[in-house]
Length: 276
Image (cartoon, rainbow, N blue to C red):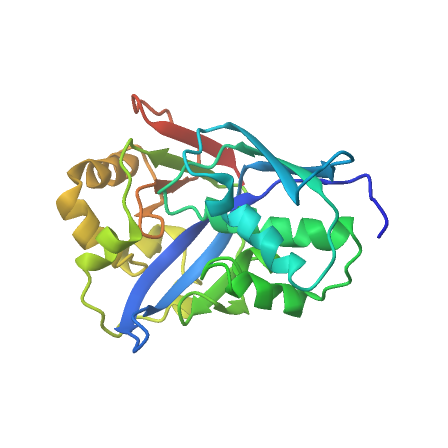
C-alpha cells in the first residue's frame, strides 16, 4: 500500500429540503421522501501513519467536545468495517468537530462516509463508489448520500438516492441551532406516517419563495410542540426576510435561504451564514 500526501478531508453537513414520513416499515424503520443538499459547513478529518502504533489506531479530537469513547464513534466503526476486507496499517486519526450534534445536519454520517473515502484514496484500495455506498449503508441511513455528496432525492430510509439538478448559487444560507438536542426517537414519537399529497421533485422546481407553501418537514409539528423555541427561530427567519425557512431533518437546526445577507440577533445559539 502506498502512502499518499493528501490525507486531510473536510466532511460537510447537509440540509433537508422537505421531509415526508410516508410509512412505517416492518423492520421498525420509516420510509421517507426528502431532498438532501450538501452545504459548506464542515468538520476536518485527518489520518496519518502511526509508525510506532501498537494497535489499529490512535484517536484524538478537538473543537466541539465528543463525550463518547472512540470505539463508539462512527468514524472508528467505518475503519473497522473496511478492515474486515482490507489490510490497513496502524493510523493516527484526528477529528476537528465543527458541525454540531443533534442538529439534523448529518455531521456524524458525513464523518463516516468521508472516512471510507479517505481510507480508499490513502491506501489505494480501488473500492468503487458503488461499493463505498454499500459500506456506507451499513453505518447509517444518511451515510450513502455523502459518498457522491451531490443534491439528491432520497426515498426508502434515506438510502435510495436519485441525483437532481438544484441551483441555489447566490443565496445566503443561515443555520441557527439553539442549545436543544432533539433525538431521532423523540422526533419520530409524534409522527403519524402518511403518503404526501405533494411531489417534492416538482415542488423543488418552483421559485424558492413558493417553497413555504408546499415543501414541508413532517417533523416540525411534533418538534415545535415540544420545543417552541425552534418554531420561534423559524418565524423570526421569515420576519428577517427569508425566502424559505425550515427545520433540517429531525432538528434542532433551522435554516433560512435569503437573497441578501441577513442581520441576525440570536443569542447563545450556534449561528452560521454562508453565501452559496
